[in-house]
Length: 213
Image 1 (cartoon, rainbow, N blue to C red):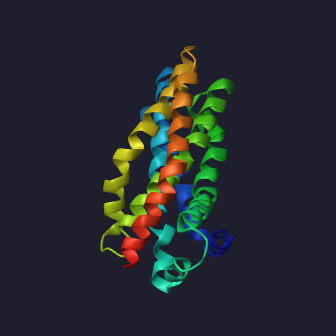
Image 2: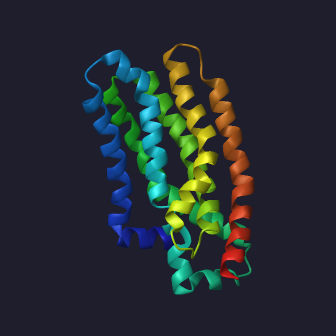
Image 3: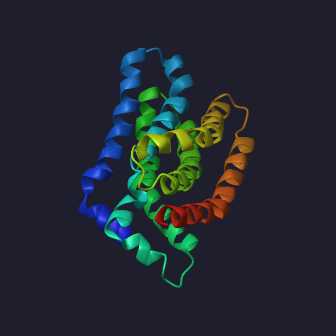
């Protein structure tokens, strides 16, 4: 609740992520042209890449403010497990930067000529995948906390880990559009989400302790 309250006081940071997502997705149909079949084929990849890049914009702020004002040191002293606190901060980050992308994806998918089933599948894959982006991104944000050029380092650390989510997310929409069924892709994304829920908070907590020391 504290992180959400602070985010509402700095709405420009939240709107930056949303507007970046909208602009990137909207520019592709203008640049590629009006060919309907080509737009449908590239829709999932474009939306997913835009969502991935947009989620990275706010990663550096995940722990930075708490680190600079001393709040992070106080959080290390509370009786609750640090991994649980990290999970709460990641949840707040996803509500701020991930959930708006999920809700807006069907509207942006209409620009590519996607129909009902494909739009629902696109939204479902983002609903499963964007929490993974926040969870994995928290590890990179914790590891680079306080370092000069941390934003670039975060990108180098987390981008390789984002690739499986990107592949399965875009692949699920493409498989659904081709009538092949996307259950396998969704199952793998669900497994990745569960794995990230178990391991990412613990890894981020360990990285935060190292950064503070």
